[in-house]
Amino acid sequence: MNFIENIFLKMTWLYSWSEYLVTDIFGLSMNSKLGGGLQFFIYDTIKIFLLLGFLIFSISYIQSYFPPERTKKILGRFKGVTGNTLGALLGTITPFCSCSSIPLFIGFTSAGLPLGITFSFLISSPLVDLASFLLLSSFFGFKIAAIYVIVGIILAVVGGVIIDKMNMIKHVEEYILNIENVDTEIQTMSMKERIHFSKGQVKEIFDKVWFPILIGVGIGALIHNVIPRETIEMLLGKDNPFAVIIATVIGIPMYADIFGTLPIAEALYMKGVGLGTILALMMSVTALSFPSIVMLSKVVKPKLLGLYIGLVSIGIVIIGYLFNAITL
Image: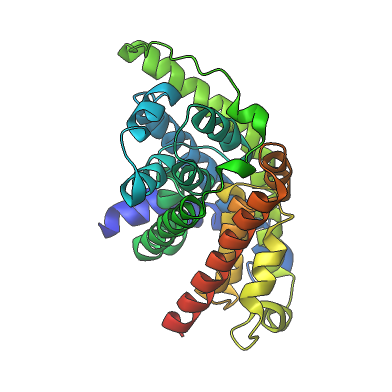
């Protein structure tokens, strides 16, 4: 297990190579801000892109067995907490950002699926997926990655159940409910077609995330090597009782997926920021980004939108404080 983690996830060989590149080729000291920041940037960027290419291809191949039509039919068979749980779990195999998940949310809602189930899917889809689990494992280890996935699924299930119990379907925009639902035949794909689909997904997702990843790695390098530890501790440190709330608020205007937030999370973790505060930042960035809220406001009315934002925000803050308390 340690061999797999070190070679394929943490990529210790890549860390050594990037260190050699900075010190022996560029002639910079690892103790200098420039040298340390450059090594952080090179190592994290290459590691994320290597892992991402492999993971997106693999997960997209699995996803090819679950097109939206099949997902809709599966979800339509279940109700109650079971349906919410299945909706959240199915959200984990869809490598979408929050904005990409909203069209699927529209399709599921217009097809008559229970609103709570569609919201469980909407919350979990950008928040947790197999790629995020493995990438988190490469940064923080399997234990923390598993914790992130579990609490993300719990948040999605609880949020969906509450929305379902409050009977909020009347707060969905009427044009969504009036969309004519057409059941299309589910087409099976050959292995060649699945491989072609997976390659296309790699290209499509890379086109969307490469720039946010570079921005995220750049911010991470800045936090790690330039911003003083005292400043980070004052704002987000364990002694600040409002650190989790601040992290949640900071994350909302940062439009990125989990891949772009990982380098920032890693840098904060190395600066001594609490795990709960880091989880709160990551969750708010992925589940409550401002662009996704704007898009969602076009399909649901203010009361339901406010309920969604409130539930997810409260859930993130509670999770953050719980994990800070547990890991103190």
